[in-house]
Amino acid sequence: MMVYDFLIIGSGIVGSLLGRELARHNKSVLMIEKHVDVGMGTSAANSAIVHAGYDPQPGSFKAKLNVRGNALWDHLAAELFIPFRRTGSYVVALSEEEKKTLEKLLEQGRQNGVPGLRLLSEEETKQRLPGISPQARGSLFAPTAGIIDPFQANFFACENAVVNGMKLLLETRFEDFLWEEGKICGVRTNRGDFYARWVVNAAGIFADEIMHKAGVHPDFHIVPRRGQYVVLDRNSFSWDKVVFPCPTEKGKGILVTTTIHGNTLVGPTSENVSDKFSLFTTEEGLREAIQGGKRLVPGWDVRWIIAQYAGLRATLMPTKDFLIEVGEVPGFINICGIDSPGYASAPAIAEYVVELLKEKGENFELKPDFNPIREPRRLLKHLSPEERRQRVALSPAYGRIVCRCEEITEGDILAEIHGPIPARTYDALKRRTWLGTGRCQGGFDFPRVIEILSRETGVAVEEVTKKGGSSRFVFGSVRGEHHEV
Image (cartoon, rainbow, N blue to C red; front, side, top):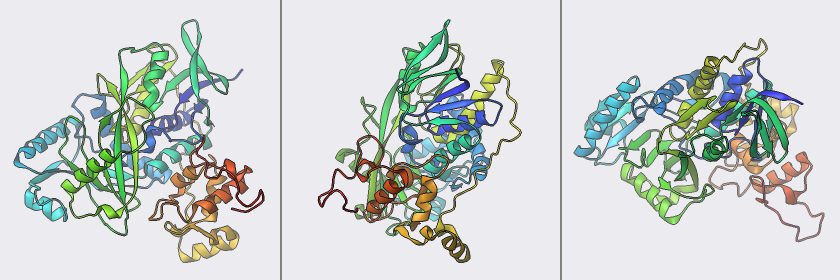
């Protein structure tokens, strides 16, 4: 019977970075994920911002880990070739009263140790932010904030952990704990039982349910907080800043931000919902996002919206803070309530868990063959003309464009289907290559992508899905069984 050192439940950004940190050492690691691909839960829909750290309450886990995590992203992004850029961010006051909030945030940020914060006058704010609301009265500038590709950050971290020895089981759903003499010794799943000395709860929005099965904090629970967003066509509207309104009791507010890929993102709303599967947008929510975005930056048109989506934040009540514990129940590591600024904090959370384990007497030795570098599989469009010619000569599939908007080739797609964590769905390819995210939103490419997935994975066209489960594209042929897509 195989007994792993660590078993991680959940492949979001926190689980993936912790898996990589554990794989750095002399530890055997198993990660289980109920979805068909990594990072499809809480980490899949967010604002793609590495927050500076002025917003969390001083003394909280969020404050400590946000600032530390922010500082770790430069080195991490360099090792894993994660698209990451420090743009700085602005919190804009739209009234004299809101300027008092900026002063409070400045003081909070200084207490939290955020470097470089400063207040900008109305004149400097409008000079730096052409297109900002004429009602702007000043702003708080945080130079250490940045933007990131959240999908690739999550995937690249998990892939690097796998390459360095972590075992990943997809479509493997946690059902219960296995116990031995009052200690957690493994988990029961839909694919059988797995044993480990430590079981890590990194299950995002469902972390409270797993925590309760372990018998800890029955009075704590996660309230799913839905955020709705709209995405603007980058060819219709160009905005290269990260701008927040003044925060309220509901959160940081509806921001207008650039993204790594050049689109403008507007959102999120903040709605407490009872259903942890409420990943749909609503007319009211989208209207709120649009109105909030226009309140900050009025010069864009709703006709430029090319996509909309919703995500859920795992807000832990009643503390509204991160909950990170090692050994409260023997054999159990609990990482719960990781909502905003969870993405910024994730590298520090992984680091902190390892430190807690050392305090518990766990011995860590660096593996001499650990490779922290994830060599990028560069898309053809990112190569020089000469490099393109060489690659197409070696593999003609790179000469066939599949996604016109984003210039993704068949060769780019094949590289991901046959990568260390193989892409098996349309959305898995979308997150890895950015195909289907342009103005046509996949209208041109998806029939060809379905055909490629079917051919390369050996499944029928009717079994190819968008995101696993029952999300099939094709339900049968209208021209006979052998008609090509």
